[in-house]
Image 1: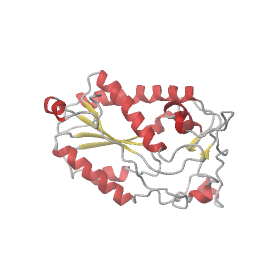
Image 2: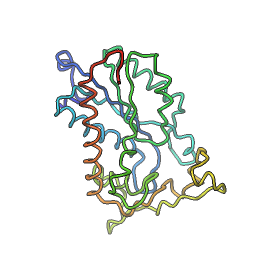
Image 3: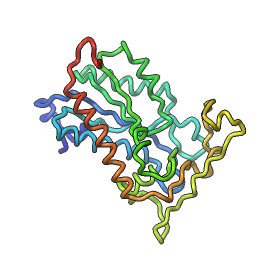
Length: 257
């Protein structure tokens, strides 16, 4: 039994031990180019959650990892078979119910650990503010890697970063040819006809069947397992201390300031 993972602990343990912080990973079920599994975002959220909660637990944090939500918002990937969609309002309702459950059980420090770019959770934090006794934080774990200089190519979806993650932590699910090369295209994304959209000045919901060839946006062939392990070291080094601080923080009228 790992006491920082809720699905593994038992009632006997919980009767004697109290948690301060709950981490809820939010994933998705969708294609990731030709080579990564549909559950990539779920596996990533679970793995990152396990690693950061273990490190925080070992530093004295009273932290628990909840089971990963395996579905996310997929409205713009529905042209691909078995991309499993939860509309934002549905996803928000599921998370809201879980937040209320945690608050009911006395856990008032909650971290949403997001692994899927389509899960835009910041509006949910605004909706929950003032409507629950819990304090909800949100982290897209992958956004903090921009300055790590681990990767040669930008990764939007199923590129070098995510493929390195898979090679390091679920290699048996990464599809490869007999010579070890990836069964994947180059992840080239098509530009729109609007320069302002291409430059990021104007936003749209991108239809991924038009944006990509096989759902991949990002070059995967430079990925290595070593890069994936180094990436995890960076993530744990940045997020585990936050969980420790959050666990030790006093809830008062000025929290989190």
